[in-house]
Image 1 (cartoon, rainbow, N blue to C red):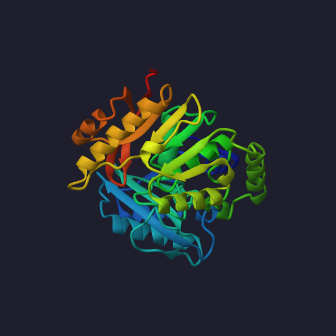
Image 2: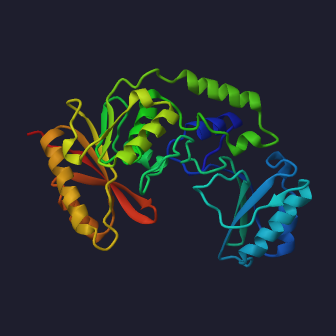
Length: 347
């Protein structure tokens, strides 16, 4: 998605976006078929707008269908151009890890059809890092994907939310933040705030404006449960860091013990996918029990389930015996998945 934004809009997007992974700002786009031309045009960019002296930088370069096809050589010329415009910059080598904290300024360079597009990452570490999740259970769900599940289910924060397979609580905590009107970037410092051209007063005003829209309580049941007591301890700790401990309830209990706290709401889960050898029978049973629970205790509720998008996954979904429809497809931890949404029939 491409859009034009003022500095204020950029700050609003970074602080308030629940679904985006990164926001990058276009610095330049030009044609380059030789390294000399690449360096000359990159050196003409006003790098001082985004990079302070002695700043650490990281380059992410891709090359496709271009005469300049060697990504390391392209990265070398761009780094030289930046160093010519900003004193003391240091290039960080090595693979980028979106799940790790990294204070280096990311520069995204794309060579395609002989056109070089250079962009500056405005976020810093990936936007799924809200700042509250330190304790995690096995196979944690990214916060952005959890928010996408709730959006795909058209959940607006005004009806009850139950996750009976909650792990470390990501779906329930994201739901609480939505219900409270708390923006996901409220506790973060973004790369754009550290740019030499950044307006600190503007950032303070944007944060104050967003904070003024927060509600003091969620006002709805937000319940997560899991048979793993350690996962529940992690969920409670994460909720406390996120500022929604009093809005959420986390219970150590079996799937079969989950109850509906209201006559309507959203039953949501990210169950295991049964990818490893020998897991499928256990996961098939889990899907069957989830469907039984939904039909027995959550009649009239909506359901949203993240399921493996593969032929074996369709077999698992049949165990649910629920009328579900695919809403979107993506990947989670490198596994193709799809969001299934529907309603539990009333008896």
